[in-house]
Length: 355
Image (cartoon, rainbow, N blue to C red; front, side):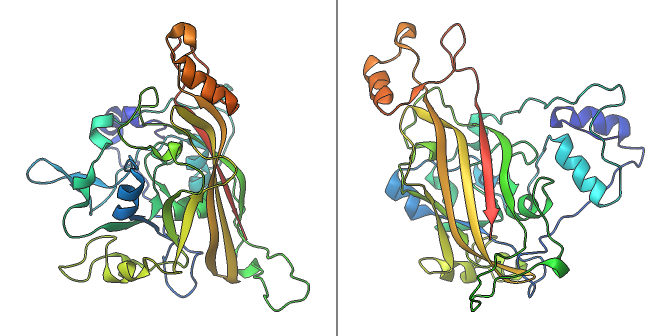
């Protein structure tokens, strides 16, 4: 029995919870560094960058509730409720738990289940979330993409790049690294995810304005976050004294403003705009295969495609000036219903990961 939608977790647990039918699988990154067990690339967010650009904080930051009932940084564990049969079956099949099939027992094709959005008031944060001790945080997942099919609020880099069924995962004993002194410059044979599409949902209130810029409104060239160039060990991630915190250690702090971090910036071809959303977002990660079991990130970028304006058509009360400005940029109104409201909050996240 497999639960495919988090909305039915309580009913599922009530019926099957006492039947001892659960399987626990622990994923740990294996292919970022051969010298450090379970090391992974980390994303890094800097408080000053958000203040400088007037950027709204991501809606998938680690949030907990402290003893006073206020929002605080969660530093124990995450709970995600992913909803993707294809990914779940693939992972279980790798562990020999089941045989993957492409149809249900009655012969009908499986249809994706609708996304469940977190209440905006539970995930929207302000500057107080940072607290007084630290002005940065490192995370094992990608910020901003807060509701994606198969990953829920947190798209962990290790699980995405090593476990997704549509990615090429090359066994370590067959990986061919790049020889930088070779005259032939043979392309390495190693892991890659090309044109990997994740179905995601905006949890931001795209139909209205915001006091600050949202990530999809960032202009071309804007830096949204950083990723560590090399994999970071668990020991360097967790605190070792009372001054440090989860994802905010002295080791990670020393990486800031150095070549140890790779900026993730909006591509120059098309940036974001106020009153517009991209229906396709592309994340590109280029790495260098140092050895069979070690990768080094060399370049990262985000590209926006297929933009549409969230302004209603003028006959539904939309601003004629904004619509004209958008039209000059070849940005037309988003598909709407008979009342002029935007039909969908969905977008595609395309992953390009290659040496």
